Amino acid sequence: MSGAAEAHVQDEETLHGRRNHRLAEAVHRYGAASRKGLEERFFTWAFSGLVYPQIWEDPAVDLEAMALKPGDTVAAIASGGCNVLSYVTAQDVRVTALDLNPAHVALNKLKLAAVQHAPDYDTFARFFVSAADRETATIYDDLLAPHLDAATRAYWDGRDMLGRRRISYFARRFYRQGLLGTFITMGHLIARAHGRDPAKLLKATSRAEQEELFKSELEPLFDMAHMRWLMSKPASLFGLGIPPSQYDALKGDAPHMAEVLKARLARLSYGFDLKDNYFAWQAFGRGYKAGGDGPLPLYLERANWETLKARAGNVSVVHAKFDEHLGRFEEPTYNAYVLLDAQDWMTDEQLTTLWSEIVRTAKPGARVIFRTAGEETILPGRVPHAILARFGYDAERSRALTLRDRSSIYGGFHLYTLEG
Image 1: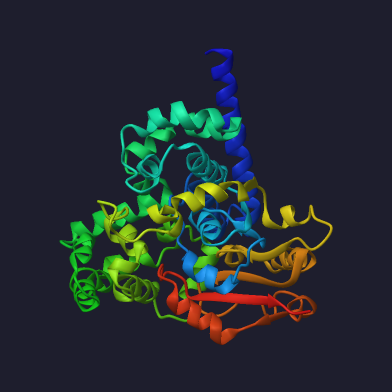
Image 2 (image 1 turned 180 degrees about the vertical axis):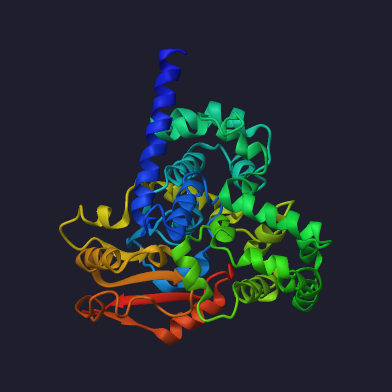
């Protein structure tokens, strides 16, 4: 093995160990010998690579809640990057995209490089709209790789378990890759093994027809005894990025997890018109609508290309824990914070540390948004009253925003505003 190749392998191993260690700090609550501890460690292993090729929070709802103004600053968990790029597309703001997962950091940096260095929208779309183009590896090598930092380039030049370069994901239907893409594919395979086809929902011409197809194609699966048994196991939802601690919050007081999942999938299936909901296309078509005439996130719409290109420099990507990053600042810095559903994973101590840093670094009137697997906010009684008392919580507006979230998989969307 050459010195360069050996160094590359060592870098990959170091990166893998570091990301597992950081994720373990965030997820592990029980001893390794316990059942819950084993589940947590299996989740850590499953979550250590690419998880979300597309983020599953609706940026339109985020933008409505945050009410961003030009010049505002946002700290957001990055995940797949769709939201942070949509924020700058909608408004001239500065966004710091934070993530513990190096694969997500690498994806966000690749997206930014593609925005900045692709010659036109069509080239960019070959990666992130069609996402199944054999020429993307050549485009990457010629136009994008020279502009990437060493760690990001090492990730995309690195190999998957079958020895294929990771950049080849974009020639092999990118949105079917990663933990979530694999989970959705497995869902399709299971449905088809039972004579059902989720893709049939995409042929509906009205919401009434969407509902009819859901009830005929998918709803019966949730009443099958062996499927209910499978859904009762926390590991069955690891592909959605749901750790064991969040599984319990998702189930809540429901008699069975199957009832919760059926209700969430029903809303995704016919709660919104297909022509407006790209999340439904991802779930039932495993990618965006072919031909480029279907719904897309803001940052992928052709009409927004020039705006996105002009503002790509407004986004910085950081591999760090949220509270670690905030701890670097000595004065109020951010107008908005986007926590996704990460707090569902946290202990009371971790929540308190996070919110202590938020309240310390928040500018007057700062907004904090997050989602929960369950319907209610998880903060009262877990974050000290002295901190929460400085924020206003609009329960009615939060419920209204929850109902407008097209991804449909969360029980609650929550908006807190710094008032004092």
